[in-house]
Amino acid sequence: MPDSDPSRLLRDARHLRLDTFVRLRWLAIAGQSAAVIGAQFGLGLSLPFGWCFLAIAASSWLNLALRIRFPASYRLSDDSAALLLAFDIVQLAALLFLTGGLQNPFSLLFLAPVLISATALPPERTLALGLLAVGLATLLALVHRPLPWFADGRIELPFLYVSGVWTAILLGTAFTGVYAWRVSEETRQLAQALAATELVLAREQHLSQLDGLAAAAAHELGTPLGTIMVVSKELIRQLGPTATPAVRDDLDLLREQVDRCRGILGKLTSLGSEGEGEGGGFLETVSLSHLVEELAAPQRAMGVALDLSSAGEGPEPVWRRNPGVMYGLANILDNALDFAEAKVCLEARWTAERVSLEIRDDGPGFPAEVLLRVGEPYVTTRGRNRGGEGVGGGLGLGLFIAKTLIERSGAQIALSNVVRAGTHGAVVRISWARHVFERGAAPRHAPEIPRAAPLPTGDAAPI
Image (cartoon, rainbow, N blue to C red; front, side, top):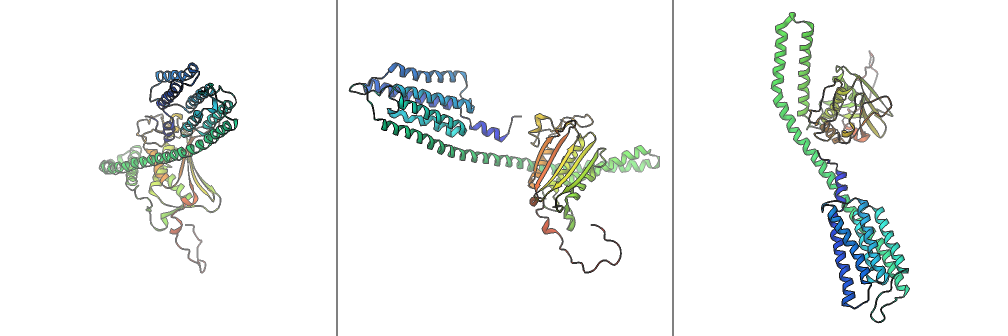
């Protein structure tokens, strides 16, 4: 599967194609050749014709070598593009040295490579090219061949004029470089925003399609699950007291798993109703510790030790029940239990600003080659569970669905491996800003009723 990392695609798209450099250089070669030939033969000026065409030929040879070595669609790295632009600056400086230095009006062409760099390369490389152009311009202001002229074959302009040209090159390089960089940076930021928007829309489209698949699966699987339930009940009735304890335990386990499958399918068909409480009244909002216990309760019979802990600073946060988030968290916890060797830790922490859940197992962890792409659709996260069974045949949609549903609530998810010496396993950390986690919960608390007098009998029981 090709790499779809948007930041990498944008970075590659920013790199200039070699064909663009080659075409621009051919245009420069044509202009330089026309200027030298026109001055030598049209105006009758005495130029070092051979040396000038030797400098122009160097650009031609480089263009031919690049065209032969690389395809036209090849995109240059930042360093390669900076070296090619530096060559253009040096080649232009050589021509100007032969034809009057900064007294030559074509000396303003020093701005062209810097302008190209500002639109396509990082600022530090543009700064380096600008310093190279200004440095060579300074050298040409002091050392150059005389500017050819009609009468005696040479002309010397006042140094004040040359200083003005040098100042114009300096200011022009700085201004055009900064201006072009700012304009191109705004364009790149807009492109990044559009790419991020397209990525979010693609994720939402995947999830919308999966909502329909979930509803269809719930409809199609309802009948066979009902048949299994009827058959299991009939077997229990027929065997009656003659059934051995092992057979009866297996049948009871079968019925429990059928009920669990029905519950999962029911959740899948209700994922779209985010924000609707599963319960009513006070059951619609729960504390963070109750949320942890609710996640862990169905998983205690999985044969893996489940270690729960809740601690924080200040009052415990309260959360409004969300079926989509509950499904996502349960999916991640179920995945950790499937791959754990002996223990899974579920930790809840809170401060005045943040609320976080951390699910940590002692299994093999995430493979390095997929860790950066975990949570994308159709990417299987891990290879084998604790029983050594391969799980690579899955579609890789479970964590994608869970991640998308949880992130809809404003959470941030980070996946990593345990890095402590002597331990191993996977870590999934989900964190919310506290005001986001408690959003919608506070207004739904029942109003506090002032207590006029203590209860006459019995002790108050916690709710």
